[in-house]
Length: 272
Ligand SMILES: C[S@@+](CC[C@H](N)C(=O)[O-])C[C@H]1O[C@@H](n2cnc3c(N)ncnc32)[C@H](O)[C@@H]1O
Image 1 (tube, helix red, strand yellow):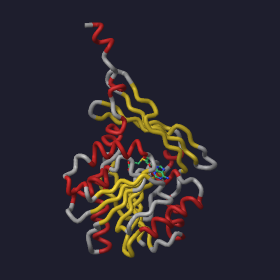
Image 2 (cartoon, protein in one colour; image 1 turned 45 degrees about the vertical axis):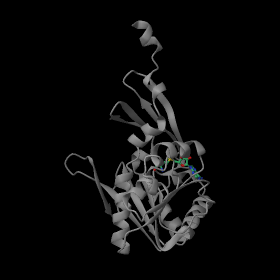
Image 3 (cartoon, helix red, strand yellow; image 1 turned 135 degrees about the horizontal axis):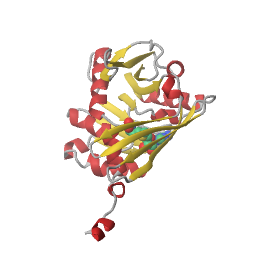
Image 4 (tube, protein in one colour; image 1 turned 60 degrees about the vertical axis):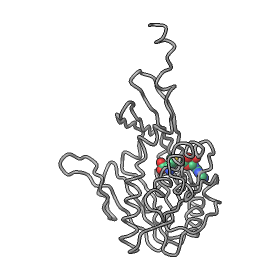
């Protein structure tokens, strides 16, 4: 008995970090509902073509093609390992006809060439990897070019006093705990180093399963760069909180004002 126990691999060793990521960080269904509804409200038509930048496992691109038989998607990431995981676990789950409407592209988002699309997504703050103004401007310009005339870029951002500090946020999920670790922060340059760790009930751990070196861009800075890149209008949709409990709600409201808040999170929608 004891011997078996010893030989048994820990939960961390048996875990798949990409599956845990998708479970804890990504809600493609919710994000795509937001994209579809917002695009339709503004443009009075449904978007059909979508490019998922910094796609990772390309989950959103795959879900997009399942939603409508006319939908097409391109998923762009420069890391072959994560794209390969996405082919095996997300693409393979689609029906053959749906699979034909998704293309995985291993490329840098700064230089990728894709057909013109209605929507480009860059979620989970991935564009914060571009720390220099010229780099981020160059990225926004290249997205602007890749969009149809009535196309839109969807981004997200967070901020508030807690964003400018080191802290670890823990969420207990089914079978593991997700840790968001704002590990270090340079208050001068706004450079931040963040990690995702996973902890398991058998006390084993996957430390630094994912690592992010970002610049904490401010909302107005992002708005300015998008306009400079050629976008005609930028909207912020900020997550709402329950007045009584203070709990974050699954509701995002268009606003230009977040009053002295310790933590805000928003979708940013840039219209071509
Ligand atoms: C935080 S993950 C995003 C995953 C997913 N899109 C999401 O919303 O959760 C960031 C991904 O961006 C990719 N990446 C970072 N810089 C990139 C670049 N310049 N071009 C293409 N992919 C990049 C990384 O390989 C990684 O898979």
